[in-house]
Length: 74
Image (tube, rainbow, N blue to C red):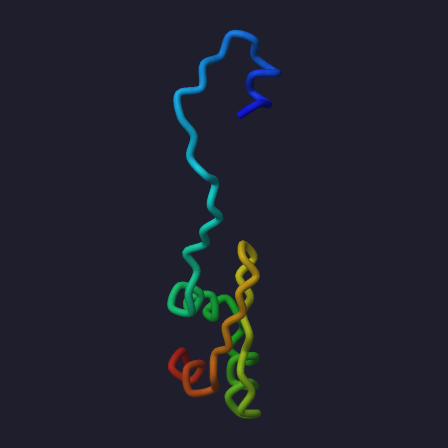
C-alpha cells in the first residue's frame, strides 16, 4: 500500500484484496485440443499405445491422454 502513495500524492486507499493466481484448466477442458492434431498422429499414438501429453500454457499443468481416450476421437 505504500507504492501508490509514492506515485500519486492525493490518493486514498479504501481497501485491498490479495492477488491470487487461478487457472481453470482441467483434463476435460484440454481434451478438445486433441482435435487440433492430425488424425495420423492420433492413430499412431493409439497404435503404439502411447499417451499424448498436453501442457497448459497458463499454469504448466500436464495432462496425459491414454490411448483409449484418444481412440474416442477417431
